[in-house]
Length: 166
Length: 472
Image (cartoon, rainbow over all chains, first blue to last red; front, side, top):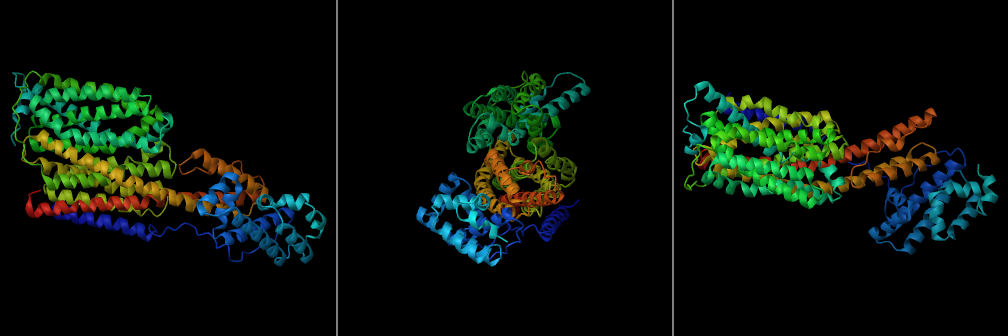
């Protein structure tokens, strides 16, 4: 075999492989984008208290994440544990007051979304709005992490108005 | 071509029959080639064992990488001095001494209970190995009949050893332990020294000779292509084990494509007499294979086979061609062989040191992106909230257990729910998250493979320059 055939064949084989992999999407990988938390997100039709509580949590995370200019997913991971919360505050340069304000804003958005979706009546929504606005930050975060407790067990507000949830 | 005086002396010139003489030469040739292959396999043999060593010796990832780097670095530094020693003291003597030192150091590696002892033993292994491989090049021409075929066998044995290293290491780690990689080399090194004992008596001390300047373009190209091959050998293994979570034995099986392709291409290399064309074609194939690995469209082991095959064929063509070019017409063979070993392993070290921070940083970035996408998939999944919370906790536990590694999340989804709808939704979620993690891990290696492909492409430069100025 002559040298020039060998070099030519090598070029063809290399280019063919790279072209085939490029055509198959080799250079087009992008991580799945996460949604903008400031954009409205569809509320699925909840089928009971547990699912209503879940949608409430997701809306609250969206609202708080939008305030802090982070993704809902980043905040979900950050608020899951105390260590995660401290790491988040330090990494994103957020102080306790900003976090508290964001968490309250998130809970208010959750109440608004639930009301707009018809999951809460206006009466229940206004009562719940007043309740979440005054929650201490730790209780507000606990509520975001597990809103079902609030819905199921009652907390002085929803216990009385839970029956009104459609 | 005339074998060197030392080689002639080492071959023995008694009154034995021609058949016995041929048999002895064949045995010597096989022993020398096996010794070269064994020593150079050590430059890559531990790559699949690094996670085990990391866990057992309780060290940092950075420290365990030095098990690999230290050997290659010391081999690069020791090669030329060892070659000078071989010429001055006698190649048979130094090959035997090198193999015995290699065996002793391998024993120390296998018995090491701390990273300090292991690293020191790896350095000693490299010094013994450098002596054995450089001196063996001075002995081979007498056994093969010419310096050209000696250089070809020596280069092919080294390339085969380096390519087989990860597979053998993975197999031994999985079946026995990481220590066994080193312990099996103890009797091997001693056995390979035995056929050379007969050459000791005929060996004479020689006065130092002026070796002349090394072949710069060939050695430069060897350094660059070795940096690229370091990526091919080490990054493929890391992708398979750390990225796609294959077992060491699975990864060992997957990476056999490279040495198999190299072995199949060896006859092709012999049929093409144009050394420059072989070197250029090999470099192009290695670069093309690495580009293919950088452009993998999916996290599939099978898709790594075509690029691995190109790299294997390229390795067989280019290493032998460049080594032959570096040794052609130069005396002494050992000293110029030492330069090629120095250039190759300096290239491996540079490749490892440049590429490791790149893929480590990319892996971290991709891990964060995958975490976001996985969390989004979990939050949006159509499974009951209570199930979702339990699942999130199990996934978090898996991630914690796996530490810095790309986590294997499948077990977090077990047991699957019994309700058919929930089960289907859970399986869909598992598929989405695993796809995300696999794609992120694959992509994390892309930039490093493409960077390595540029090292290979850069090797074309000295080959092209040699065309004008120096005969390659």
